[in-house]
Length: 326
Image 1: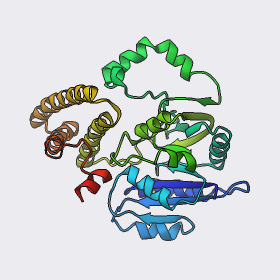
Image 2: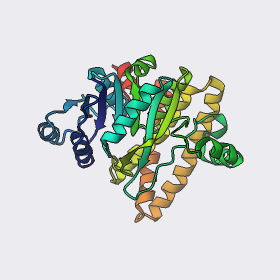
Image 3: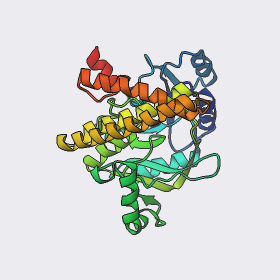
């Protein structure tokens, strides 16, 4: 098998249906591929329906909603391909894109992770000039200032017309890598439940001497926000996990002294902001966004209490946390 397409799903069936239809339509005479769908225990009755509808694909059910990293690693563990394409369920794939990814990766073995151009339903291209969150640009204000001060340098890096360009990291929605590279960096880091696992993956490739690249010769449709749910509780949960994953990234990627500094800044800034917005939400209760902040404040209070108790920044939902607990 040349390529194993690995898709992690959690109750995103409508988007997944469109994605699998696009894959089902691909017929190639030059390479063989398989599609593996890891369902993170949606438990809503749709798993057997999709398994029957797309019977030529492999469906596996996870033991729980164990996070994106765990789902990707689970899919890779049963994959037979020499290359892996980790794909979001809210994408649509074409033969041309798959061929280009295979040819580009095979011709450039120094590329540890390859992605491509992504476009959404409004015909807007995703920006892919991502930089690693280092000390001087970890937070939004410092990151914006860095980009302004280095505007010419960054434009020269990303705005040329070569087929390939090299950001620091690419989104986990479309990640193509060889089995060799996957094994070399030991796969996805299961310290993360959701968010920042793609940044961490690319950092591991970079630290191992590989390159992260985007090819302009292939385009994949990626629906904006297509894999997320819109109710207030879920939105609060996912936004809380963004902050938790930042803490996890800090603890994984920085020396102790810098960790203390960044953790402290993040805690102070987040709790101050959420406290103010939570108080406002009591008076402006008709604004849903403010209610999200109140729920986030509660979630973060529980998380930070857990950090003090368990002496770890890992999300309690992440598999590596659950393994240590077991």
